[in-house]
Length: 271
Length: 129
Image (cartoon, rainbow over the protein chains, first blue to last red):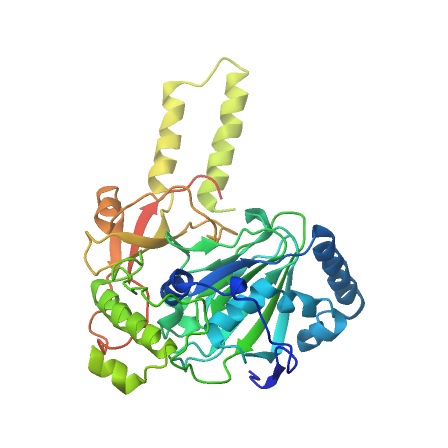
């Protein structure tokens, strides 16, 4: 899959963002553990309805345009320029994050059987947060519409998607039954799927990718408090075996330290 | 339609005729009993994913596949989880036909699969396809 970085997410000189839009320590900590955060954009319903109409027209005329969806539906630029979305992306990837040239509109109509658990791309993974998915929903999504499903905490697992075929429902899976205008920002490697659509309505989901451009520095990119203590419960993920809980706990600390500009070697010595 | 189901349909047609002409007798039930005894059982499959490779470990996920044409378990938000452990399922009559494979090469540094997979079956005669 192409992973070329297309361009900076914001034009030079326009990257100022009020700190109130940044995530705080607790949100970053939760992202490190669970691998996702839900952002509600600040547009009226009519704006999202307009995007739905534009998408429908594109699909009706030409089918799925693939990476060209942004050119065909330029209002999507505004979604990913929303300050709440930029605040979350900046907090996790740094202020100079970039939008990837690959993106896809998932358009499921009623009767679609859904899609199975998988991780995107091939199994060359790492614990660092180098790439994010930004999944935008321009309409309300309810269970019958076949929502995206994610399995929190799986973003550090390196699992061939083909071998996930015998998995079905997990107790801790999260169905993204969301309001129109929600952008689900997830770690690129989180396990995800989507349910069957039997609603009689179409469900549209725009999946955009965002890349880290520079390594973290000792100055966090989020709204960080100097006295915040990162102490995740090592057994907080319902899916974890005992061994995986230990591994996760070390990993989470490593990611936290890395996001604070601490090198891998230094982080290892600290453990 | 399976042969045994044809036979069942024939028995029902016969019984309906008899009901209109005085009713079914006790002896008429014997062919039905024989039919049930000879109907082929089919394999119901239950995949249980657990936190550890013990039959007492908590279930974290499941899939259930019924031997019915067109049936397919789907992703959905389950409101009920029938078994908390594999042992619960065994008590309910399920038989384990595959245990988690712990002999595969294992490196306790990597994170790979989620949970441990038990595959269970029940052999049952299902009346309706």
